Image 1 (cartoon, rainbow, N blue to C red):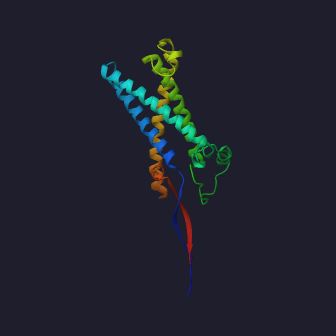
Image 2 (cartoon, one colour):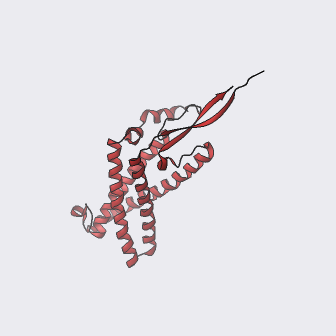
Length: 212
């Protein structure tokens, strides 16, 4: 009787993302989507009372984003390992990725992939820039917010913040679209449930099992 080895792929899972991190992620995702949506609708309405109300709501959402970013930064400093910024800051891995292609058979580490970690850090910087320029515009246009003392109604300075804020908003919209598209493509290509990680906290990866 002869035997042969049959290699099959099974899924291994690990609880990676804690409840606090997932809650912050959900909050920031919701606020970002609402900010983009409300901003686009307000621009479309032009100079109308409805647009003014939407811009006021847009500013309130901006405060919500600042709150979410502060929470994320705080949790990145005091939270568990996979929530920490050390999990995203991987300069050696980035350099290795640029120099040589790692074997495709190697199992990925738990947490964000090397390339994704770099993109997430850039995205956070974009969000922070968008939030700061948004606070500046709130002080200039609406005379409100923490920067009012320095920038309140200083319309001559508006051009310094308006264009960067708009470009950051475009970058955030592009990231959201690409992020969702890559999640879908990854699941289709690799057959690993990835999008649910920020809901359940579990991350999955394929491991090879040999049977005789």
